[in-house]
Length: 298
Ligand code: AMP
Ligand code: MG
Image 1 (cartoon, rainbow, N blue to C red):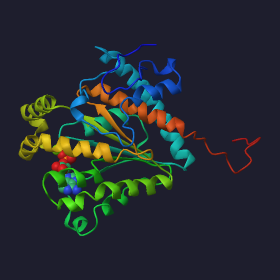
Image 2 (image 1 turned 30 degrees about the vertical axis):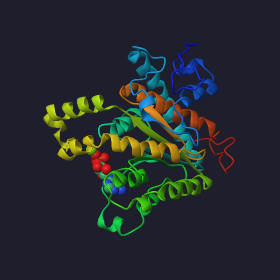
Image 3 (image 1 turned 90 degrees about the vertical axis):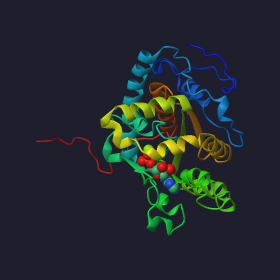
Image 4 (image 1 turned 180 degrees about the vertical axis):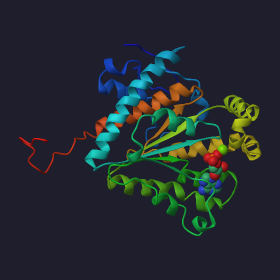
């Protein structure tokens, strides 16, 4: 068992996620719990290290091999989720531009059966969406029984970009924290398991990633000049994220702050949380309603 030093944000948890096969499920959960925001915690993002790689100092190769195991595990659990047709799983991904939402979807969900997993992306609202309350378009996309849905951006944009750009008055967006908590509580009470991940990168990392997009013509489609304007608003966004993380991490829909400068570690943390949470659902394959004893296929 490897131990990691206790960092400022890691409380007293010193377990690791190094070898999934060798540690108990409880340990597995504890190791990633250092990234979990307990309800009512005041979050200061400058205290969270985006370069954190847990116990995997220089351990990308090892990290990737663990990730592969978790990918396989997630595939099995997702099939079980689909077969059992009981639970609903919602994964929310939020990040600054270039934070790695798309990469996470590729890295964490590779191998799962696309038939039971869906990605819902939320862009600038359409005029029809704007004619409704901000949760209208969100509610339409939540998972049904047996389904896993990944939100690439979410209703949290309505207290992030909307706040930073004064798209609605402050007395309106301020009410949304409670509204969102209640909405998520309703989903949870109706069988939805909700996991929310904030992919934490820093300004330097964003610069590198934007530059890489600029340097590669095949990545120009991802680059928008508007991203540079957003980048200037980094402090405002951090403040908005801190409020989100401080006010909307609940027992029924917790936030995780995922160190995301290292893509492989980001994927490892998220995969670990997902696998651990799905295992915690104690799912079972359904038993056939028919008597299959002695059935012979000719
Ligand atoms: P991307 O994820 O890079 O494709 O960009 C999607 C864009 O949609 C981002 O600039 C978001 O800030 C923006 N967006 C998403 N939801 C909202 C919203 N509710 N209000 C305004 N802009 C939004
Ligand atoms: Mg973008």
